[in-house]
Image: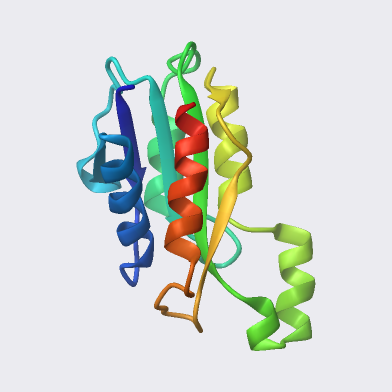
Length: 152
């Protein structure tokens, strides 16, 4: 399956997951600033962003928004984000805000659907330690299993 992973990364965690997923699926991972304007013959498109201020990065949101309506018809799509654990932070305000605004992956997934994409899997989130990471133990394995389910 021709797989493209388009990602943005701030501290390198999302990039590591995106690269590992692309490798596991025999696809290609590209940072959003080098992403193609046209996804060509892509059969599975995965987009990924760190959650910053309860949303995806501006660059990734803009790239997805620029995809023409209907351009993902017939394409399987999925989205994931990296995020900090609110349990580790133990901050009631952040927990409250996350409950209202959520994380990056779900809105990205909805936008991909509006462009015609067919959801290959539910949006996923992978935990980083603290604000900058690294990824929590086991998260990379969990991400690769999620990606394999997208391709099946």
